[in-house]
Length: 341
Image 1 (tube, one colour):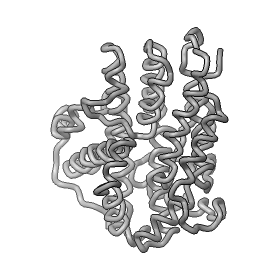
Image 2: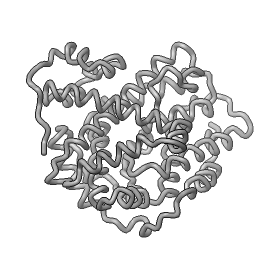
Image 3: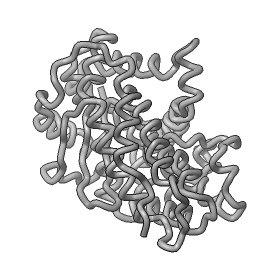
Image 4: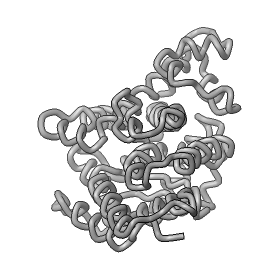
């Protein structure tokens, strides 16, 4: 099978975009020891979610923006190569074009990401990558402690670890949907590339106007919507867990929440860039998923765990927008639940 993505084109392109706006003076990447913070974060996540994380088997690495982009290039290239049908023709220059497209996406996003859990759908080596300079910049701008910020971010990423490692059917469900998209679509990989990356990173819009989704045949649009719904659940749940962390563990949790919300609600030029790059749709996904989990937890404190109990318990797109429909289907009711402090 021909190569779908030319790695060197992706790496070179990502480097150009990753270097933009990176003048903040941060210590060299890889110096911060995340292992101790990860053990604390794992304990918090396990108590809130009930997931079994096994953090000792997980690689947790501090990287710079370029390092984050390169690791994602390798991960996504392997996944796309695996999912692309073997008999699909590959035009001359297509691999290079795909590489440039992936490099632009990852290079642009490298300046926004604090941390990422890579479920390693193909390679089988899950990892958490913490972007050290972005963590330091965020902490500096919000007048917060970088180590406390790192711990809080690790709660989010290890929640994803629990979703994809501790709930095997959840991982397989998403991988199955992506496989359907790639193998049943007549569109070339370059047309699906941005949309696939968006869905994997929780950046799918979930809105009616989605250029890549509109390009899909009618029979595949529901598959794309299902993939977006699953990622909205994953991102919203991780966001909700972050906001349940006791203040005895993260004393400045509320300050972090305010800083994160302000960062996502950028205005002016920053807001325009966010819309053009897809970050605005990611914020929408965080917000929709978070509101869903907040709503069901208010009715039953165990409801968030119920979402991951079995495939039929996953909310539909309509239920995400109207949590009462999911609660009614699950026959859940009760007094409002309290929030840890």
